[in-house]
Every structure is written in C-alpha cells, then in structure tokens.
Length: 77
Ligand SMILES: [Zn+2]
Image (cartoon, rainbow, N blue to C red; front, side, top):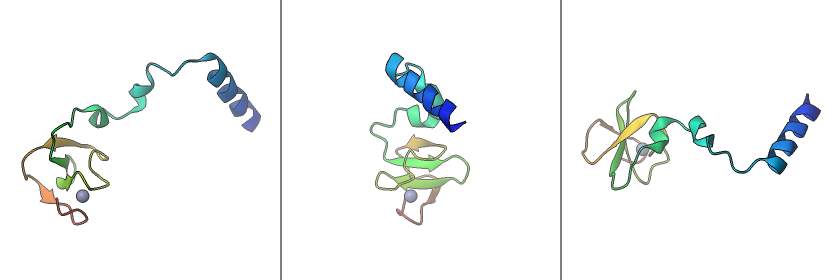
C-alpha cells in the first residue's frame, strides 16, 4: 500500500499543476471574508476569540465586530 501511495503522489506532483479545486477541502468558514473582523465566534460553543487567539478563524464560527458570545478563557475574547 505504501508503494501505491508513493506512486500516486509522485504522478500527481509531476503531471498536475496546483489543483484548482483544492479549496473544496477547506471548510467554508475558513473561506469567509474576515477582513476587518475584530472577533471570531464559535457557532457551537459561542466562544468569542480575538485575532491573537489560535482559534480565531480556526474553528466552525463566524466573524463579527461585536462583543457577542462568551469570552474565550485563553485570549480573553
Ligand atoms: Zn480565544
């Protein structure tokens, strides 16, 4: 199996340009336009993260300029 995987990867690397539809594997929330967004709010836990937080735009959520939701304990929201 390892050999097959290696062969496939090598073939793709040689013959394929950067995949145009590679963004399909990226969650929709990561493609959202967050320019100018002050906060990122997790849709599930409603935790609010600021731009310094590792969870900013890194969990299923939405961007907002308002202090809504619950402040993150790590970044302070
Ligand atoms: Zn946070």
